[in-house]
Length: 228
Image 1 (spheres, rainbow, N blue to C red):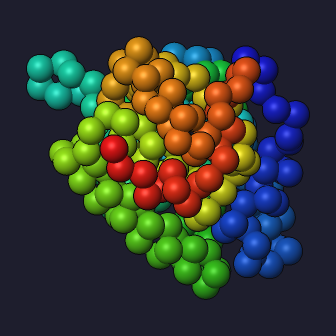
Image 2: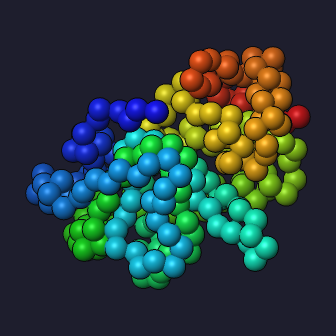
């Protein structure tokens, strides 16, 4: 799958957190940040490594996951273009507690720790963004625990898709989601075959349409509220 032509600078200037930065702050961010290409199946981050940067997704799709003591993979969330993650670990100054793997060819933006900490010291708008980011992330994981423990697969798939349209955490998506059924399975904890059944049901309900290369969301509000 080809990656988009957006440049790193264009990506940085389009982020929510950059809107409140001064021209001088933005100039340093643009000078310090750098890009990395991670092929499908490669690791963006590894559990246990020292955390030296804040990470954003320019293009592609990654999953944040871990492995249980028995070797079972547990996926916490997917991260889509326009999204940034890892601020909590930077603030706590700890080693990374999870793996981040590319589900497709992915372009990654990295802001060095020194730049991240400098913005914390100098930019009130950046601090406000991080406060909102952490609050929304907490709400996301609470909802996911509820989903994993109490909801059936059809509803989990619906919530998984709806969660990708969070305006703060995942600001880069449009109505057409370029995601495969296999990728949805990784994020919702279901087999590809079971995801296909769920998507067929959601299509019959008029919530989405299965198009070539992705899924078109037709009614986001109903998708968020769907329960089988």
